[in-house]
Length: 511
Picture 1: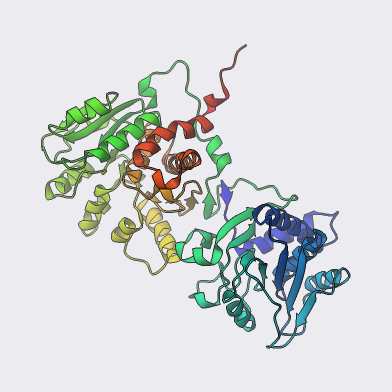
Picture 2: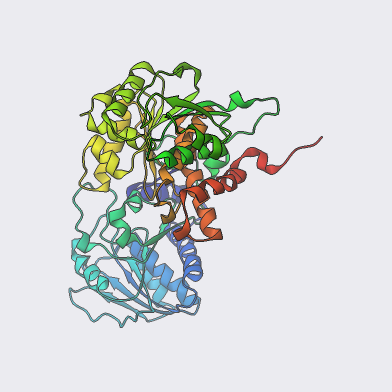
């Protein structure tokens, strides 16, 4: 997995990289490599835009911005640079980049006062933000506010000016540069995953300079479950294996008016490789399962309405999931309590099961076995653990709840976050807004149940489950569009995700 760096950690990383490179002439070499990565990305993203106005601050980010301007100048761009130097005292690396630029062009103005005449900026111009560094400079806030009022194609370097990922202080959103795109390095910043920062970050890209090779990390607080992690997550099926080697799973789902949830979760579990699946559904609904999912066994509940009894041979099952479409009746709440009282191994709770946990003032939540998986969306999470004033507070609450309760809590969202009992958080980057559709969460429950049943471990079940869920959505959108994605179509596209990442996808080996 890939570590998520904050801005201070990036400064430390780069200082270490510079120290390790005996062939470099200091930090200027680092800046030059980073500027090449930025310019290559600009060429790909903004092919037709050939004029750029660069605002640089008196910090290393400003030095990078000037070097980017110089590189674009060499690519025949029309360039203007505004160097903001309110103190009249530039750091060495900024002064060096300024002097290098002036050797090639006089299109740089250095501003040392509070007032100046900014260059003309058109809607089609690239406006590059290199103003604020790791520690925001209040004297530059008015420039950021001014630029936010201008129409242009706006690009932030590293992190938008005015945004801090190293301070717990309340952020003044009016002082953050509103970027259309953000080019950062080494890893995304944590704030990029929070919805309130989307208007400022825009579409972000992680650039890896040629001198840097990302390292897998498992000891960081915040991590990304990336493609490399996914490629090693799913083992090859053994030739001499049987269905019970791939899980004997129990899915407690559905009610008289919500049998679709049971079907979606059940189909997703089977397509995700579950060896043997039993669905616990209301009495009289077995024909729905038999006709739509003939691969599954059916256990009928005594109630014709919903889940009402956990009198089942629970010890026979490798993995148990409960929640999709079961409803929230008093009878169902008592059945869930019966289940939690009699089953002490980890299980998966989703949807209505989470609502029942939240409705009982924490008593049922306290009964959830350690090592279990909860899969709430933001609303469900807030009902379980209390509301949060912002995403930063919620993610800390997520970490704390998982660590204190010994649970795996998968918080669903644009960048699904799985908190581990260790207090670490693993983010998923796959998926698209097409997943914001009825039944999508039921499909995810089925995938995770299947991975649990195959004894992949809860962390892999959550992280790989979220990855495959999102990857299937991306594949559907590539063939059709996000707008038309349904949960049923998502199930049909799961094989494309598994084919990409299962070990047997390389084909048979012959001696």
